[in-house]
Image 1 (spheres, rainbow, N blue to C red):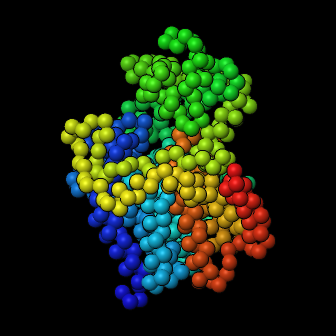
Image 2 (image 1 turned 90 degrees about the vertical axis):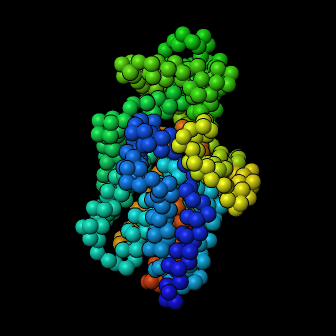
Image 3 (image 1 turned 135 degrees about the vertical axis):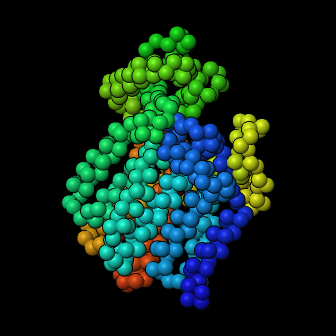
Length: 476
Protein backbone atom coordinates (compact mmCIF):
# COMPACT_ATOMS: atom_id res chain seq x y z
CA UNK A 1 0.00 0.00 0.00
CA UNK A 2 2.88 2.39 0.69
CA UNK A 3 3.46 2.57 -3.07
CA UNK A 4 -0.22 3.10 -3.91
CA UNK A 5 -1.78 5.60 -1.54
CA UNK A 6 -4.00 6.76 -4.41
CA UNK A 7 -5.84 3.43 -4.47
CA UNK A 8 -6.03 3.38 -0.68
CA UNK A 9 -7.62 6.86 -0.52
CA UNK A 10 -10.16 6.13 -3.26
CA UNK A 11 -11.01 2.76 -1.70
CA UNK A 12 -11.62 4.35 1.71
CA UNK A 13 -13.81 7.01 0.07
CA UNK A 14 -15.73 4.28 -1.75
CA UNK A 15 -16.36 2.34 1.46
CA UNK A 16 -17.40 5.49 3.35
CA UNK A 17 -19.82 6.66 0.64
CA UNK A 18 -21.38 3.23 0.27
CA UNK A 19 -21.78 2.79 4.03
CA UNK A 20 -23.13 6.27 4.77
CA UNK A 21 -25.47 6.62 1.79
CA UNK A 22 -26.66 3.01 1.43
CA UNK A 23 -28.70 2.17 -0.63
CA UNK A 24 -28.53 5.46 -2.52
CA UNK A 25 -31.58 7.51 -3.49
CA UNK A 26 -34.17 5.89 -5.74
CA UNK A 27 -37.01 8.38 -5.89
CA UNK A 28 -39.31 10.18 -8.36
CA UNK A 29 -38.49 9.10 -11.95
CA UNK A 30 -36.06 6.44 -10.78
CA UNK A 31 -38.65 4.85 -8.52
CA UNK A 32 -40.92 4.47 -11.54
CA UNK A 33 -38.13 2.55 -13.29
CA UNK A 34 -37.56 0.42 -10.18
CA UNK A 35 -41.27 -0.26 -9.77
CA UNK A 36 -41.65 -1.26 -13.42
CA UNK A 37 -38.66 -3.57 -13.12
CA UNK A 38 -40.05 -5.13 -9.94
CA UNK A 39 -43.45 -5.77 -11.48
CA UNK A 40 -42.05 -6.94 -14.83
CA UNK A 41 -43.29 -3.99 -16.85
CA UNK A 42 -41.60 -1.33 -18.95
CA UNK A 43 -42.54 1.89 -20.70
CA UNK A 44 -40.59 4.16 -23.00
CA UNK A 45 -41.39 7.26 -20.91
CA UNK A 46 -38.31 6.41 -18.89
CA UNK A 47 -35.47 4.18 -20.05
CA UNK A 48 -36.86 0.83 -21.17
CA UNK A 49 -33.34 -0.61 -21.32
CA UNK A 50 -32.56 0.46 -17.74
CA UNK A 51 -35.87 -1.03 -16.63
CA UNK A 52 -35.05 -4.39 -18.22
CA UNK A 53 -31.50 -4.26 -16.87
CA UNK A 54 -32.76 -3.64 -13.34
CA UNK A 55 -35.32 -6.40 -13.81
CA UNK A 56 -32.41 -8.75 -14.55
CA UNK A 57 -30.55 -7.49 -11.48
CA UNK A 58 -33.61 -8.06 -9.27
CA UNK A 59 -33.85 -11.59 -10.63
CA UNK A 60 -30.27 -12.24 -9.50
CA UNK A 61 -30.26 -10.46 -6.14
CA UNK A 62 -32.47 -8.46 -3.80
CA UNK A 63 -29.56 -6.48 -2.29
CA UNK A 64 -30.90 -2.94 -2.44
CA UNK A 65 -27.48 -1.30 -2.61
CA UNK A 66 -26.57 -3.04 -5.87
CA UNK A 67 -27.96 -0.15 -7.92
CA UNK A 68 -25.67 2.28 -6.13
CA UNK A 69 -22.68 -0.03 -6.67
CA UNK A 70 -23.36 -0.23 -10.39
CA UNK A 71 -23.19 3.55 -10.55
CA UNK A 72 -20.47 4.41 -8.02
CA UNK A 73 -17.86 1.78 -8.91
CA UNK A 74 -17.22 3.17 -12.45
CA UNK A 75 -16.66 6.68 -11.04
CA UNK A 76 -14.10 5.45 -8.51
CA UNK A 77 -12.40 3.29 -11.15
CA UNK A 78 -12.30 6.17 -13.59
CA UNK A 79 -10.72 8.43 -10.99
CA UNK A 80 -8.06 5.84 -10.20
CA UNK A 81 -7.28 4.98 -13.83
CA UNK A 82 -6.61 8.57 -14.87
CA UNK A 83 -5.08 9.84 -11.60
CA UNK A 84 -2.48 7.06 -11.36
CA UNK A 85 -0.77 8.74 -14.31
CA UNK A 86 -0.25 11.80 -12.13
CA UNK A 87 1.08 9.82 -9.17
CA UNK A 88 0.04 7.08 -6.76
CA UNK A 89 0.91 9.23 -3.77
CA UNK A 90 -1.12 10.51 -0.86
CA UNK A 91 -1.56 14.02 -2.32
CA UNK A 92 -3.12 12.72 -5.53
CA UNK A 93 -5.32 10.40 -3.47
CA UNK A 94 -6.57 13.25 -1.30
CA UNK A 95 -7.28 15.37 -4.40
CA UNK A 96 -9.37 12.56 -5.91
CA UNK A 97 -11.35 12.18 -2.68
CA UNK A 98 -11.92 15.95 -2.56
CA UNK A 99 -13.26 15.81 -6.13
CA UNK A 100 -16.07 13.58 -4.87
CA UNK A 101 -16.92 16.25 -2.31
CA UNK A 102 -16.98 19.19 -4.74
CA UNK A 103 -20.58 20.43 -4.24
CA UNK A 104 -21.83 19.94 -7.85
CA UNK A 105 -20.28 16.42 -7.92
CA UNK A 106 -21.43 15.51 -4.41
CA UNK A 107 -24.97 16.66 -5.25
CA UNK A 108 -25.57 13.61 -7.47
CA UNK A 109 -22.73 11.16 -6.96
CA UNK A 110 -24.85 8.82 -4.79
CA UNK A 111 -28.24 9.84 -6.21
CA UNK A 112 -29.45 7.24 -8.69
CA UNK A 113 -30.95 8.73 -11.84
CA UNK A 114 -30.52 8.08 -15.56
CA UNK A 115 -28.15 11.04 -15.83
CA UNK A 116 -25.76 9.69 -13.19
CA UNK A 117 -25.73 6.22 -14.74
CA UNK A 118 -24.88 7.78 -18.10
CA UNK A 119 -22.23 10.00 -16.50
CA UNK A 120 -20.57 7.12 -14.61
CA UNK A 121 -19.99 4.91 -17.64
CA UNK A 122 -18.99 7.69 -20.00
CA UNK A 123 -16.54 8.85 -17.31
CA UNK A 124 -15.02 5.36 -17.04
CA UNK A 125 -14.69 4.85 -20.80
CA UNK A 126 -13.11 8.30 -21.20
CA UNK A 127 -10.61 7.46 -18.43
CA UNK A 128 -9.66 4.20 -20.14
CA UNK A 129 -9.24 5.92 -23.50
CA UNK A 130 -7.09 8.72 -22.09
CA UNK A 131 -5.00 6.30 -20.00
CA UNK A 132 -4.18 4.25 -23.09
CA UNK A 133 -3.36 7.40 -25.02
CA UNK A 134 -1.01 8.71 -22.30
CA UNK A 135 0.84 5.40 -21.95
CA UNK A 136 0.63 4.73 -25.70
CA UNK A 137 -0.88 1.29 -25.11
CA UNK A 138 -2.51 -0.45 -28.01
CA UNK A 139 -6.26 -0.87 -27.83
CA UNK A 140 -7.22 -4.52 -27.63
CA UNK A 141 -10.22 -6.05 -29.36
CA UNK A 142 -11.66 -6.84 -25.92
CA UNK A 143 -11.42 -3.16 -24.93
CA UNK A 144 -13.07 -2.01 -28.15
CA UNK A 145 -15.95 -4.46 -27.85
CA UNK A 146 -16.58 -4.01 -24.11
CA UNK A 147 -16.40 -0.21 -24.41
CA UNK A 148 -18.79 -0.25 -27.34
CA UNK A 149 -21.26 -2.39 -25.39
CA UNK A 150 -21.11 0.06 -22.46
CA UNK A 151 -21.58 3.05 -24.77
CA UNK A 152 -24.48 1.41 -26.61
CA UNK A 153 -26.05 0.99 -23.16
CA UNK A 154 -25.59 4.76 -22.81
CA UNK A 155 -27.53 5.28 -26.05
CA UNK A 156 -30.69 4.04 -24.41
CA UNK A 157 -30.22 4.85 -20.72
CA UNK A 158 -31.18 8.42 -21.72
CA UNK A 159 -32.99 9.42 -24.88
CA UNK A 160 -30.16 11.85 -25.76
CA UNK A 161 -27.35 9.58 -24.54
CA UNK A 162 -26.21 9.01 -28.12
CA UNK A 163 -24.96 12.62 -28.30
CA UNK A 164 -22.25 11.94 -25.74
CA UNK A 165 -21.56 8.27 -26.53
CA UNK A 166 -21.36 8.26 -30.33
CA UNK A 167 -18.19 10.42 -30.62
CA UNK A 168 -16.40 8.10 -28.18
CA UNK A 169 -17.39 5.03 -30.21
CA UNK A 170 -16.14 6.69 -33.40
CA UNK A 171 -12.84 7.52 -31.68
CA UNK A 172 -12.43 3.99 -30.33
CA UNK A 173 -12.74 2.43 -33.76
CA UNK A 174 -11.13 5.03 -36.06
CA UNK A 175 -9.05 6.88 -33.41
CA UNK A 176 -10.44 10.28 -34.42
CA UNK A 177 -7.90 10.31 -37.28
CA UNK A 178 -10.20 11.16 -40.15
CA UNK A 179 -10.48 14.77 -41.37
CA UNK A 180 -12.74 16.85 -39.14
CA UNK A 181 -15.67 16.96 -41.56
CA UNK A 182 -15.71 13.16 -41.88
CA UNK A 183 -15.60 12.69 -38.11
CA UNK A 184 -18.63 14.89 -37.65
CA UNK A 185 -20.51 13.40 -40.59
CA UNK A 186 -19.91 9.93 -39.16
CA UNK A 187 -21.15 11.03 -35.74
CA UNK A 188 -24.19 12.75 -37.23
CA UNK A 189 -25.17 9.70 -39.27
CA UNK A 190 -24.78 7.37 -36.28
CA UNK A 191 -26.83 9.69 -34.05
CA UNK A 192 -29.61 9.73 -36.66
CA UNK A 193 -29.50 5.94 -36.87
CA UNK A 194 -29.78 5.60 -33.10
CA UNK A 195 -32.65 8.07 -32.90
CA UNK A 196 -34.45 6.38 -35.79
CA UNK A 197 -34.18 2.93 -34.21
CA UNK A 198 -34.87 3.88 -30.59
CA UNK A 199 -38.61 3.25 -30.80
CA UNK A 200 -37.99 -0.14 -32.44
CA UNK A 201 -35.56 -1.12 -29.68
CA UNK A 202 -37.93 0.10 -26.94
CA UNK A 203 -41.23 -1.17 -28.27
CA UNK A 204 -40.27 -4.28 -30.23
CA UNK A 205 -37.06 -5.58 -28.70
CA UNK A 206 -37.60 -4.54 -25.08
CA UNK A 207 -41.39 -4.91 -25.19
CA UNK A 208 -42.05 -1.53 -23.59
CA UNK A 209 -45.43 0.17 -23.59
CA UNK A 210 -45.60 3.33 -25.68
CA UNK A 211 -46.12 6.33 -23.39
CA UNK A 212 -45.28 8.85 -26.11
CA UNK A 213 -42.27 10.65 -24.56
CA UNK A 214 -41.84 12.57 -27.81
CA UNK A 215 -45.13 14.37 -27.11
CA UNK A 216 -43.46 16.41 -24.36
CA UNK A 217 -40.86 17.92 -26.72
CA UNK A 218 -43.36 18.61 -29.48
CA UNK A 219 -45.89 20.22 -27.14
CA UNK A 220 -43.19 22.30 -25.47
CA UNK A 221 -41.94 23.55 -28.85
CA UNK A 222 -45.37 24.21 -30.34
CA UNK A 223 -46.54 26.11 -27.26
CA UNK A 224 -43.22 27.97 -26.90
CA UNK A 225 -43.32 29.03 -30.55
CA UNK A 226 -46.93 30.13 -30.19
CA UNK A 227 -46.00 32.20 -27.15
CA UNK A 228 -43.36 34.09 -29.15
CA UNK A 229 -45.38 34.44 -32.36
CA UNK A 230 -48.88 34.91 -30.95
CA UNK A 231 -50.56 32.11 -32.86
CA UNK A 232 -50.91 28.40 -32.15
CA UNK A 233 -50.49 25.77 -34.86
CA UNK A 234 -52.34 23.15 -32.82
CA UNK A 235 -55.76 22.08 -34.12
CA UNK A 236 -58.84 23.06 -32.16
CA UNK A 237 -59.11 21.33 -28.80
CA UNK A 238 -62.67 21.08 -27.44
CA UNK A 239 -61.48 21.38 -23.82
CA UNK A 240 -59.57 24.61 -24.52
CA UNK A 241 -61.68 27.50 -25.74
CA UNK A 242 -58.78 29.98 -25.96
CA UNK A 243 -55.44 28.29 -26.53
CA UNK A 244 -53.42 31.51 -26.61
CA UNK A 245 -54.82 32.70 -23.29
CA UNK A 246 -53.77 29.44 -21.67
CA UNK A 247 -50.35 29.51 -23.39
CA UNK A 248 -49.64 33.10 -22.36
CA UNK A 249 -50.56 32.31 -18.78
CA UNK A 250 -48.83 28.94 -18.36
CA UNK A 251 -45.77 28.78 -20.62
CA UNK A 252 -42.27 29.40 -19.31
CA UNK A 253 -38.96 28.56 -21.04
CA UNK A 254 -37.79 26.98 -17.78
CA UNK A 255 -39.45 23.64 -18.49
CA UNK A 256 -42.37 21.88 -20.10
CA UNK A 257 -43.73 20.80 -16.69
CA UNK A 258 -45.75 24.03 -16.36
CA UNK A 259 -47.92 22.94 -19.31
CA UNK A 260 -47.66 19.18 -18.69
CA UNK A 261 -50.66 16.93 -18.11
CA UNK A 262 -49.86 16.58 -14.38
CA UNK A 263 -49.84 20.33 -13.67
CA UNK A 264 -53.41 21.13 -12.64
CA UNK A 265 -52.67 24.71 -11.54
CA UNK A 266 -55.09 27.11 -13.27
CA UNK A 267 -55.95 24.34 -15.78
CA UNK A 268 -52.50 24.68 -17.34
CA UNK A 269 -52.60 20.96 -18.16
CA UNK A 270 -55.60 21.28 -20.50
CA UNK A 271 -53.70 21.10 -23.79
CA UNK A 272 -51.37 18.28 -22.74
CA UNK A 273 -54.21 16.34 -21.12
CA UNK A 274 -56.06 16.31 -24.44
CA UNK A 275 -53.21 14.38 -26.04
CA UNK A 276 -52.16 12.22 -23.12
CA UNK A 277 -55.67 11.35 -21.90
CA UNK A 278 -56.73 10.44 -25.42
CA UNK A 279 -53.56 8.45 -25.84
CA UNK A 280 -53.89 6.47 -22.62
CA UNK A 281 -57.60 5.81 -23.03
CA UNK A 282 -57.24 4.25 -26.45
CA UNK A 283 -54.01 2.71 -27.65
CA UNK A 284 -55.32 2.64 -31.20
CA UNK A 285 -55.32 6.44 -31.37
CA UNK A 286 -51.70 7.03 -30.41
CA UNK A 287 -50.37 6.98 -33.98
CA UNK A 288 -53.08 9.37 -35.11
CA UNK A 289 -52.36 11.75 -32.24
CA UNK A 290 -48.62 11.53 -32.90
CA UNK A 291 -49.21 12.36 -36.57
CA UNK A 292 -51.44 15.31 -35.63
CA UNK A 293 -48.98 16.68 -33.10
CA UNK A 294 -45.96 16.15 -35.37
CA UNK A 295 -47.68 18.05 -38.15
CA UNK A 296 -48.39 20.97 -35.80
CA UNK A 297 -44.77 20.81 -34.56
CA UNK A 298 -43.24 20.90 -38.04
CA UNK A 299 -45.66 23.62 -39.15
CA UNK A 300 -44.67 25.83 -36.23
CA UNK A 301 -40.96 25.41 -36.99
CA UNK A 302 -41.25 25.94 -40.75
CA UNK A 303 -43.72 28.83 -40.65
CA UNK A 304 -42.32 30.61 -37.59
CA UNK A 305 -38.58 29.78 -37.42
CA UNK A 306 -37.61 32.94 -35.53
CA UNK A 307 -40.25 32.37 -32.87
CA UNK A 308 -39.12 28.75 -32.58
CA UNK A 309 -35.47 29.79 -32.23
CA UNK A 310 -36.36 32.39 -29.61
CA UNK A 311 -38.16 29.71 -27.62
CA UNK A 312 -35.30 27.20 -27.94
CA UNK A 313 -32.58 29.75 -27.15
CA UNK A 314 -34.53 31.07 -24.16
CA UNK A 315 -34.85 27.55 -22.79
CA UNK A 316 -31.18 26.77 -23.48
CA UNK A 317 -30.09 29.97 -21.77
CA UNK A 318 -32.20 29.11 -18.73
CA UNK A 319 -30.74 25.61 -18.66
CA UNK A 320 -27.16 26.93 -18.82
CA UNK A 321 -27.97 29.84 -16.49
CA UNK A 322 -25.75 32.08 -18.58
CA UNK A 323 -27.41 35.44 -19.12
CA UNK A 324 -28.82 36.92 -15.94
CA UNK A 325 -26.90 34.55 -13.62
CA UNK A 326 -30.13 33.27 -12.15
CA UNK A 327 -30.13 30.47 -9.56
CA UNK A 328 -29.71 27.06 -11.17
CA UNK A 329 -32.95 25.10 -11.23
CA UNK A 330 -33.11 22.22 -8.74
CA UNK A 331 -29.43 21.86 -7.83
CA UNK A 332 -30.52 18.93 -5.66
CA UNK A 333 -32.66 16.09 -6.97
CA UNK A 334 -33.70 14.72 -3.59
CA UNK A 335 -33.54 15.45 0.13
CA UNK A 336 -34.04 11.81 1.16
CA UNK A 337 -32.40 8.43 0.74
CA UNK A 338 -33.77 4.97 0.21
CA UNK A 339 -36.31 3.56 -2.22
CA UNK A 340 -39.22 5.96 -2.02
CA UNK A 341 -42.56 6.23 -3.79
CA UNK A 342 -42.96 9.94 -3.10
CA UNK A 343 -46.61 9.88 -4.14
CA UNK A 344 -47.58 6.86 -2.02
CA UNK A 345 -46.20 6.40 1.49
CA UNK A 346 -47.89 2.99 1.73
CA UNK A 347 -46.28 1.49 -1.36
CA UNK A 348 -44.92 -1.97 -0.49
CA UNK A 349 -41.67 -1.18 -2.30
CA UNK A 350 -40.83 1.72 0.01
CA UNK A 351 -37.56 1.35 1.87
CA UNK A 352 -36.78 4.58 3.68
CA UNK A 353 -33.49 5.06 5.50
CA UNK A 354 -32.34 7.74 7.90
CA UNK A 355 -30.98 10.67 5.93
CA UNK A 356 -27.24 11.08 6.75
CA UNK A 357 -26.42 14.17 8.80
CA UNK A 358 -23.93 15.36 6.20
CA UNK A 359 -26.70 15.29 3.60
CA UNK A 360 -29.08 17.17 5.91
CA UNK A 361 -26.44 19.87 6.30
CA UNK A 362 -25.71 19.91 2.56
CA UNK A 363 -29.36 20.19 1.53
CA UNK A 364 -29.98 22.95 4.08
CA UNK A 365 -27.71 25.10 1.90
CA UNK A 366 -29.80 24.54 -1.25
CA UNK A 367 -30.46 28.21 -1.98
CA UNK A 368 -26.80 29.03 -1.59
CA UNK A 369 -25.81 26.09 -3.81
CA UNK A 370 -28.10 27.33 -6.59
CA UNK A 371 -26.18 30.59 -6.75
CA UNK A 372 -22.67 29.14 -6.70
CA UNK A 373 -20.86 29.62 -9.99
CA UNK A 374 -19.80 26.00 -10.43
CA UNK A 375 -23.42 24.87 -10.35
CA UNK A 376 -24.06 26.76 -13.61
CA UNK A 377 -23.75 24.38 -16.58
CA UNK A 378 -22.26 27.03 -18.87
CA UNK A 379 -19.05 26.75 -16.82
CA UNK A 380 -18.62 23.10 -17.88
CA UNK A 381 -19.49 23.98 -21.45
CA UNK A 382 -16.72 26.59 -21.52
CA UNK A 383 -14.18 24.24 -19.87
CA UNK A 384 -14.92 21.60 -22.49
CA UNK A 385 -14.83 24.20 -25.27
CA UNK A 386 -11.39 25.32 -24.04
CA UNK A 387 -9.95 21.80 -24.23
CA UNK A 388 -11.68 21.17 -27.55
CA UNK A 389 -10.23 24.30 -29.21
CA UNK A 390 -6.80 23.81 -27.64
CA UNK A 391 -6.46 20.30 -29.12
CA UNK A 392 -8.32 20.81 -32.39
CA UNK A 393 -5.26 21.28 -34.64
CA UNK A 394 -3.09 18.60 -33.04
CA UNK A 395 -2.42 15.14 -34.44
CA UNK A 396 -0.80 13.03 -31.71
CA UNK A 397 -2.85 10.32 -30.03
CA UNK A 398 -3.31 11.93 -26.60
CA UNK A 399 -4.47 15.27 -27.97
CA UNK A 400 -6.87 13.59 -30.38
CA UNK A 401 -8.33 11.58 -27.50
CA UNK A 402 -8.60 14.63 -25.27
CA UNK A 403 -10.28 16.44 -28.16
CA UNK A 404 -12.98 13.79 -28.60
CA UNK A 405 -13.67 13.57 -24.85
CA UNK A 406 -14.12 17.36 -24.72
CA UNK A 407 -16.21 17.29 -27.89
CA UNK A 408 -18.55 14.58 -26.60
CA UNK A 409 -19.22 16.41 -23.33
CA UNK A 410 -19.64 19.71 -25.16
CA UNK A 411 -21.98 18.41 -27.86
CA UNK A 412 -24.08 16.68 -25.20
CA UNK A 413 -24.79 20.04 -23.56
CA UNK A 414 -25.32 21.78 -26.91
CA UNK A 415 -27.84 19.09 -27.82
CA UNK A 416 -30.19 20.46 -25.18
CA UNK A 417 -30.59 23.50 -27.41
CA UNK A 418 -32.79 21.30 -29.61
CA UNK A 419 -34.14 18.54 -27.34
CA UNK A 420 -34.27 20.03 -23.85
CA UNK A 421 -37.63 20.19 -22.10
CA UNK A 422 -36.49 20.99 -18.56
CA UNK A 423 -33.65 22.84 -16.82
CA UNK A 424 -32.78 20.48 -13.95
CA UNK A 425 -29.13 20.71 -12.94
CA UNK A 426 -28.76 16.91 -13.11
CA UNK A 427 -29.02 17.02 -16.91
CA UNK A 428 -25.56 18.61 -17.06
CA UNK A 429 -23.96 15.98 -14.82
CA UNK A 430 -22.33 13.85 -17.55
CA UNK A 431 -20.62 16.93 -19.00
CA UNK A 432 -19.55 18.03 -15.51
CA UNK A 433 -17.71 14.75 -14.99
CA UNK A 434 -16.09 14.90 -18.42
CA UNK A 435 -14.85 18.44 -17.77
CA UNK A 436 -13.18 17.12 -14.59
CA UNK A 437 -11.76 14.22 -16.61
CA UNK A 438 -10.20 16.64 -19.10
CA UNK A 439 -8.52 18.60 -16.31
CA UNK A 440 -7.14 15.44 -14.67
CA UNK A 441 -5.95 14.11 -18.03
CA UNK A 442 -4.08 17.34 -18.74
CA UNK A 443 -2.17 17.01 -15.46
CA UNK A 444 -1.58 13.31 -16.09
CA UNK A 445 -0.16 13.99 -19.55
CA UNK A 446 2.23 16.61 -18.19
CA UNK A 447 3.27 14.30 -15.36
CA UNK A 448 4.12 11.47 -17.75
CA UNK A 449 5.46 13.36 -20.78
CA UNK A 450 6.41 16.76 -19.39
CA UNK A 451 4.35 18.22 -22.22
CA UNK A 452 1.34 20.51 -22.20
CA UNK A 453 -1.76 19.52 -24.15
CA UNK A 454 -2.36 21.24 -27.49
CA UNK A 455 0.05 23.87 -28.76
CA UNK A 456 0.88 27.30 -27.45
CA UNK A 457 -1.04 28.90 -30.32
CA UNK A 458 -4.17 26.76 -29.87
CA UNK A 459 -4.18 27.29 -26.10
CA UNK A 460 -4.01 31.07 -26.62
CA UNK A 461 -6.88 30.89 -29.12
CA UNK A 462 -8.92 28.69 -26.79
CA UNK A 463 -8.33 31.02 -23.84
CA UNK A 464 -9.13 34.11 -25.90
CA UNK A 465 -12.53 32.61 -26.76
CA UNK A 466 -13.56 31.00 -23.47
CA UNK A 467 -12.20 33.41 -20.85
CA UNK A 468 -14.16 36.45 -22.17
CA UNK A 469 -17.29 34.29 -22.43
CA UNK A 470 -16.81 33.18 -18.82
CA UNK A 471 -16.32 36.76 -17.63
CA UNK A 472 -19.43 37.88 -19.52
CA UNK A 473 -21.40 35.08 -17.88
CA UNK A 474 -20.16 36.09 -14.43
CA UNK A 475 -20.85 39.78 -15.00
CA UNK A 476 -24.31 39.23 -16.48
